[in-house]
Image (cartoon, rainbow, N blue to C red; front, side, top):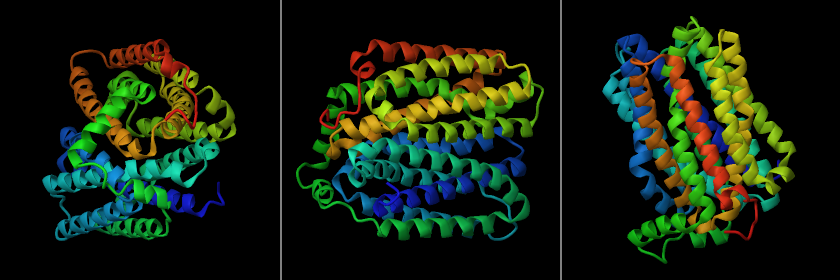
Length: 408
């Protein structure tokens, strides 16, 4: 797989764009919080990043399936490069951040990702063999988690040492590198023809995507399960974890950072472990998804019972490996069972529903934490995780699914 130049170009696009977006968002969040001393305004960055995923998901899926996915990567990264250039212009002067303008910049970056991520994920099965899908997704996920961990660690340090304008200039360079790497990808000819969009009108293509998802037993079950799971995912936002750390554990922001780092370390370890159990993942994909849904509920309950910061760090770390293995299993299952011409729409619809529920859950649980003990929030989340496990267990198509290249 590492000898596959086309996949390596796609991998480089993934890590550079991830580093650029996360680094910019982390530093912006810190600056807004320090400048306004408002948790609500800082949390607004989450809404700015999430709302476009909900609004543009269906349109993005159709366009990703109609046009060259390589060209989609190039155009979206060029668009993001221009947006960050606009942010640099905003940041000249006295250094104060215009919060409303930055929200618009973040929303634009997120809107581009609505098109960029489905195009990336839909390209993977075109660039690697079916037998290499698990390894490819594991490699992508592991490197993504490493880059996100670096973003959180380096972002906090950079904002203390450099003006935000200079950090934004570095982000522009990262997007430029991503564009150059995407230009080197050679998209398979069959995919270019399939994605040309000459067969259906836009509206018909949009409706056929929804119809396909509704009728596909595995894609439908996975989408329902993941959408519901993003309700309890809402308890893992930075604001709620920080509240849990300070109120339940009597810790501080540094202790919250240790937990986030522990989770990323667990995700990285789980992604690497998935590389070694590829055959097992292919044969027992559905069972692994079911088992990890129950594991998420039990580990969340254990986290809620933590009495010290270091117990919370341990449980945050333990949470990571099953989540990483489950993510690899789900992506590989979709890529191997969904028709290539529908994959962009399936991914985009999945992202749209998940982001809408996650945004609602993050705001709802933050509001609820003002009325109930913070530990109870995490107990509620664990119950919802367990309910998704029972749903997956009761769905025969999902429970017995495996990576069958002919199932799509």
